[in-house]
Amino acid sequence: MNLTRLIQELNDYSKHGNGELILKNSQAFWTLYLVRGQLLYPKSKHHPVRRWNRAINQHRSNWHWRTDYSQFSDNPSWECQLIDRGLSQKQLSLIQAKLIIRSLVQECLFELTPYTDLNRDWKPTQTAISTFCKVVALSSNEIQTILGTAEQMQKQWQAAGLSHLHPTMAPILQEGADISELPIADKYLNGKLTLWDIAVERNQSIIEVTQSLVDWTKRGMIKFQDIPDLTLPSSNDNAGNTPIVADKKPPEIQQTPPKAKTSLIACIDDSPVLTLTLRKILIPNGYQVLSIPEPMRGFSQLIEHKPDLILLDLLLPNADGYSICKFLRETPVFKKTPIIILTAKNTSIDRTRAQLVGATGFLAKPPQAQELLEMVQQHLG
Image (cartoon, rainbow, N blue to C red):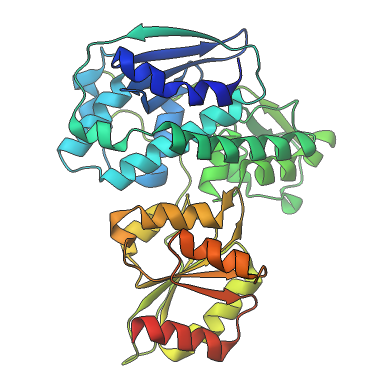
């Protein structure tokens, strides 16, 4: 069946209460845990622990969820129970939980998009769900937005000639390969990380990571193969296995000179050239700069640092600047944060659309130093 039609029909499941919607064919098997027609969690039969662990490390890396797992180890929907517990005990914020779910849903829809022969099966459940979970569950409109991104990613994946590969596969460096010419560090090519894992660790798109490795497979330097899922902690080992992740780089924040202004400005833009231009203008004038090349992956940094002003590019990898602006405005933390749109499309229609999604200001790229500083000072004083 068609995924777009399925998502449009999700509201109909609200009549049936909470339950599990199973989507499957000969190659895929996903369970969607629904709460009154909203999606709380998507779970694949393939690598469920690895997916969960990846999303947690991406958006809440210091949450020791493995110590709580033993209480829900007998529950097939232990991830939902852990999210519920994390929210109720304030180990997870509502935003962090939402981001975890969004990341997993995007992976789910990316993998399911190519299939048109999916069968569905509905299983009602009586599991009690807290109000917290009902708040963070994704509506059909939210899922529709993520589906649009997933479909675009899938088109890029196929256009790049990657349809013979699957993002759950792991690249392994072959013996005798010259590591001096590798496109990425050899620590990512040890057979312990999938393409999804590497993309998250390197803060790159799955297409970019995979495409950089394909030529090496043709030269016999790298091989792609399936790897097992991560192991869940046993009842005798609450700490569980150490998550297999590369070291995370801290947010790239450049400090202001002494006695300068302390306002923090977040620059959401994937262009190193534009980001450097913005730094050269802002830092000498006493502002701190937080660089975020990809909005959804860097959203936890925004939550953590709460910038005083956000500069947002419209053309972002795997994201639409208008949708990001709307998403930020719907997030209580950023409801009143000045958001200035940066774009080369400086038309009245673009300006009107930017205002409709809550943008505070609008600047053409590349921004002129005086114009940028005047707008920043107007909103920050």
